[in-house]
Figure: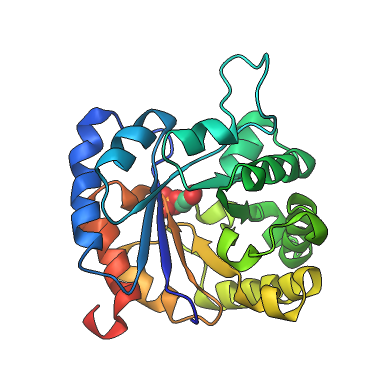
Length: 257
Ligand code: 13P
């Protein structure tokens, strides 16, 4: 890994202010693991409170609207999450695609809005179990990613610092069964090849590719040893400092885990 491993917690729809103590514990622990970049994407309501106290970790949003503002009741723009203290946004998560019918085109528009607001983007992709079992996983993920990312000429110049990909096979999310290291290796290699095609050799080689889907302290070490894994997007195991930082520890120093 040329860049520091990037370990991002996606709290999904979990967390009230009672969880601030956990975020504080994660922030304190992150100060002891400087070889790893640790970040949290809490619900919108906790972005500002966590950002205000955090000394080490970056705070992000789990989604944003594709327009700057207007008559969109209940929606939140990229500029608003940036104003609350978010430095990045997760886009195209399979739960957004499933629960809210988000299409590749919409996700692409959101990415454009996020970059324009100065945010970093974690762009998610991943196939269903049915697609994997039919043998179409690689073709699906390549097409989904190519259609969800803005065209290369609309990406920021410093794209390797601003964009990160998260491969999250839907069947591995929240199931306790992560993808095998062979499956991860194959898909991350394909994503790397696609990034080089889309962004050119220099930028395409540098964008980090995270794995997500049932990452836990006890499988993190093996996952981080897979070529082209630049970190993890963690759901359930990011909800406590103990398990989340167990994953960060595995990324920080494989010998310690
Ligand atoms: P789990 O780690 O709970 O499987 O969730 C993964 C995920 O969806 C992160 O975005």
